[in-house]
Image (cartoon, rainbow, N blue to C red):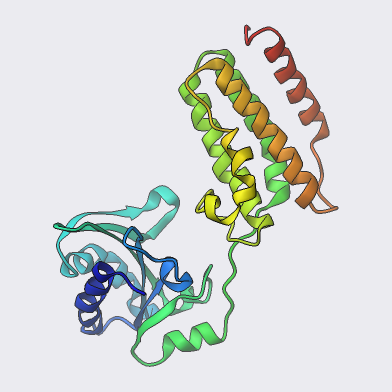
Length: 267
């Protein structure tokens, strides 16, 4: 069931998209296709154009967004490495977050999920979806192992230097880039940071909660130790046989953590 606010937005916006001769169609992804959409959900729209008009459409993205409703704010998704994304907030009286992703039909073939088609001018969207396969990127175990112990050492140094906000940010980064994706991957869910990890991997919530920290040196150290423990467990359970373990770095960093813990974190 589409919530009333989202449905009203789509009913108003769809004719406007259809009136733009440069567009090939419109699709929707995210929680819309999983059946998990509620009144708090974003609306993830995929605006598809033929290759010959896609650059013009992307350039005019802000103007397109302005026509769809009372636009309060909009900015590109360059902070997440996706300049084709326009992140919009519509309202009032009720606020609605809408993501507009402007892509070509060629780019639609390289996707992480199969969106629901809302409108398809000449069947181009259906053709692309039927002849290509969605694939969400899996965790890259070697990429993680090559970096993990360096990240842990960096966080430990921040704690020892009293840069606790930096340490807390580092713990959150590792949780979002390593622990959450691995836990979700193990559960057969999309390894998207820590998105809905409470619902999809309830058995890991306690362990992940232990990686949270207060603005306190001891709390930060405890969270870092818990981070290392959870990663080691997930690596043992999920790591491929060909994984090259950075044993030297692991041993050195674990020893550093043990020394720091033993002297109360003093330099």
